[in-house]
Amino acid sequence: METSTTYTLNTGRNGLFIFLNAETPDILYASNNTDPQPYNKTSGTVDLGEFRHALSQLTVQVLAGEDMASTVRVKELSVTTPARTATLFLPSGDDGLEVTQSPEDAYEREFVDQVTDFTDGKIEGTLLLFPGTEGVTQINLSLIDTSNQDSFSRSYLIPFFTNVDNPNDPVTLQRAKNTTLRIRVNQTVVQNPNEDVILEGTIRDWVDGGSYGVSIN
Image 1: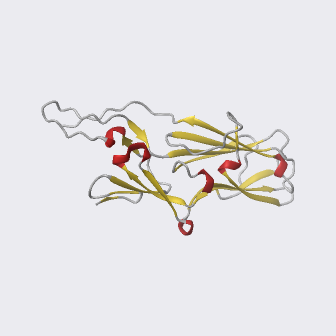
Image 2: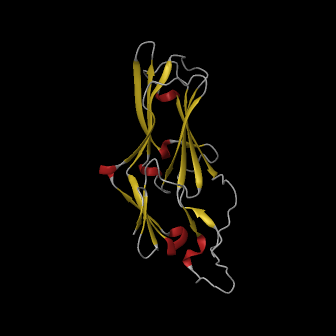
Image 3: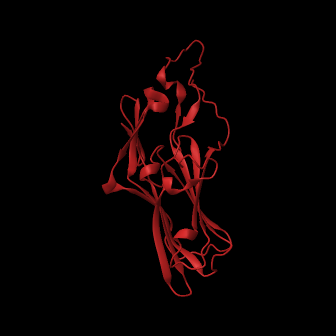
């Protein structure tokens, strides 16, 4: 087997085991795996189809609203999900990803773990997740008012966020797309902020860095 800390290719080279952590790379696969063609030494050409992203990208932002007290800070911001492992069966193409949930070994990605000021900007973090796992993936937020040490902590599943572009549709994690979740903190105090923490989400196509060709000699 070919192994790394984040993925393992089986000996038959038709299945890729993926383990999510902070080092997990952007994994792409060739779309023509569903009907693979043997290498032709005469023409020197193999039709791989197009390379596609196997994972979803999630961006979490925390922004200060106009009415938020200047003493409010973020104490914790993290993302957790039990959907940490999956196998990508290459011959199945776009339908080849099978995700496994392991609550006892949940994946947690911390973006903030100490009191952080965000009054003049935003806090932002990005990570890779498996498509379709929005129902078990949650955003954990803790706020503190440094003037009196009052604090507030909540966890929000991704579907809790309002889809800005299509309010009637839920926010989801989709293959090869970036989902951005914005938490806008509008309250002036943190004792009872539920009505003033605004949850918004958008889904956009993945921004590719360019076109790449693969030559096989």
